[in-house]
Length: 138
Image 1 (cartoon, one colour):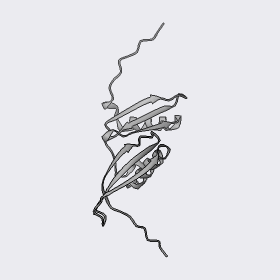
Image 2 (cartoon, helix red, strand yellow):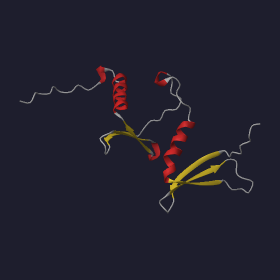
Image 3 (cartoon, one colour):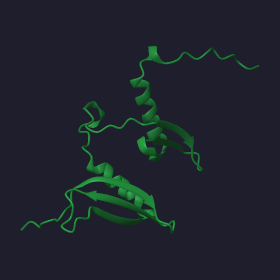
Image 4 (cartoon, one colour):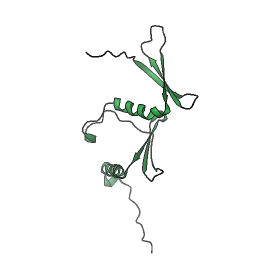
């Protein structure tokens, strides 16, 4: 016997932080309105749960099948992409999306080399900027 799940359709959401500094508040606007005429659902999450919530939200998107050789059903255009070095010397990739959300990924050596190989394959050699010749130090 399948279980009935009561769900509410939403047409908008907003995010804010609670005054206690330990919780995030997400406000969902329901559509249609509730029987009492209200349309607001507030959910509070501890800050430690936010990475899991973000991961679940991404998993809810249509996922590519067969790696990057297939059409990607949901792709974002980042406002900014940055690379940095973390405290243990690891490569950190930060992608800033519209509305200011930023996701940072810690990449190990194998992942970093895979990223480099993918970027090199995507950028044909003729489109790469030519580096000036480097002189040999004596």
